[in-house]
Length: 116
Image 1 (cartoon, rainbow, N blue to C red):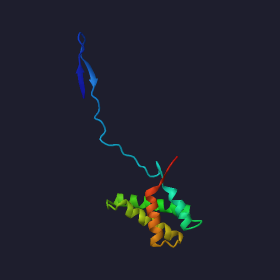
Image 2: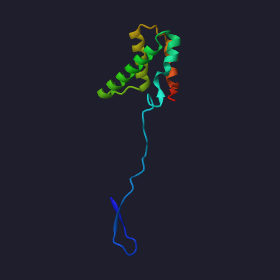
Image 3: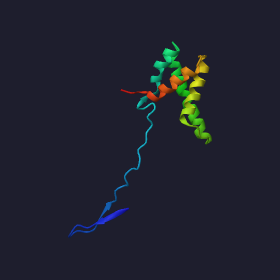
Image 4: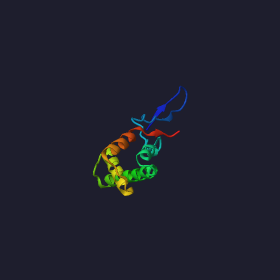
């Protein structure tokens, strides 16, 4: 779409119309702005020697579950998938994840450290 602008004494000149301003700007904060593996510090306290392994498997399974539910068209809340990923990762590593440890780790997920 163009608008015609004709300064006095000149031929009409086509000027491109300005695009509409954006209504929203979206980006993925997890893994780009926030360090999703900052939960490994608490995981290490709860499960010595297994903190990073739990964090990595947890994140991998969280991503797997997110992709599977997206592709199947079956919506599941992010926190439901996050909790399921934690339970799966702990079971895979043979860690005794009781309800108190699960809640502490889930709450920690709300407080990721930012990348420097």
